[in-house]
Amino acid sequence: MNTGAPRARRGAIVLSGLILTGAVFMLCLCVGSVPIAFRDTLDVLRGALTGAAREDYIGVILLRRRLPRVLCAGLIGASLSLSGAVMQGLLRNSLADGSTLGVSSGASLGAAVAIVTGFSATVGELSGTTLMAILFAALSLAGVLGLAYALDKSLSTQTIILLGVVYGMLVSALLTLLITFSGEKLRTITFWTLGSLASVTWGSVGLLTGAFIVFSAVLLPHAQALDLFALGESRAAHLGVSVRRTKVVCMAAVCALCGVCVSVGGGIGFVGLVTPHMARLVVGPSHKRLLPACLVGGANFLMLCDLAARTLFSPRELPIGVITSIIGAAVFIALYAKRGRHDAEA
Image (cartoon, rainbow, N blue to C red):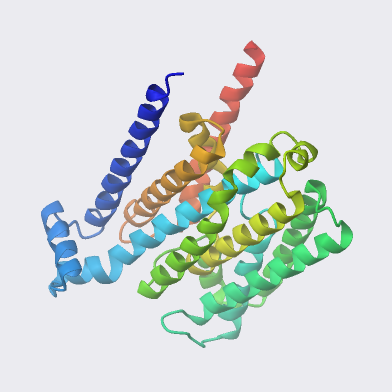
C-alpha cells in the first residue's frame, strides 16, 4: 500500500497551519490603534529573546500590552477549540462544547461575585476576579460530576447534558440576581461576561500556558478512544476502552481548562462549538488529526477575533465575545445549511 501521498498531505497541512499561525500572530502584533512596522516588531521580539529589550514606546506597547494579549488570545482559542472537539466526540453530540457541564457559567458567576463584593486578594499577577472565577469553576466541576455520578453511575450522555443544562440555568439566574444589585458595577460585569482580554498580564499568560500544557497532555492521548466512541459506548467498551474512566478524565480536564480560560478572558462563546466543525472539513473526522487541527484553528480564530474587537471601532473596544458570537453563528448556520443541502441531494 502506498502511504506516501497521505503522509505528504498531512505534512503539507501541518506546514500550512504553522505558516498561517505565524502570519496571524505577526499581523496581530503589528496592527492596532498604534500601527507598528513589521521590521520594528521583529526587532523588539529579537531583543526580548536576547535580553536587550527596547525601552521606547514601541517596545512598551508590544511587550507590556500587545504581546501578552495576543498570546492569551491564541492560548484561549486553542484551549476552547480542543475542549469543544473532545466534548463533541465524547458525548457524540455536535452541539456540545467545553461549557456543556456549566463550568464556564460557574466561573463567570465567581468573577461576578468578586466584582460585586470588591474582592481584591491577589496571587502574583492574578487578580481577585481571576482567583474567584477559578475557585467557582472548580466547585462547579466537583458539584456537577459528583451529582451526575450519584444519579447515574454509568455517567450516561443524557444525564450529563441534562445536568449541565439545569446547572447553567441555575447559574444564569444567580448571575442575573447579582447584576440586579450590582449598581455602578453593572457595566464591568456585563463587559466581563461578554469576554475581554483588555486587562491580561504576563501572569495571565503563565496561568494559561501551564493549564494548556497540563490538560492538553491529558486530552490529546485520548484521540483513539474518541474515535471508538463514535461507534457507540458499548462497542467502545468491547474494543477495550474504559468508558467511564475516559469520560471522567476527559470531562474533568476539559472543564478545568475552560474554567481557567473563562477566569482570564471572560465568557467567550462559539469558539469550542464552531472551530471543530471547520477543522473537520479540512482534516476529516479522525481525532488523531482533528485535535491538533483544532489547536491551530482555534488559536488563529480567536487571535483574529481579538484583533477585530480592538480595531474595528478604535479607540473604543468591543467585547471579544460579541465578535466570536456573530462570526460563529454565521459560520455555524452556513455549515448546517450546506450539510442540509448535501443530505437532501443524497
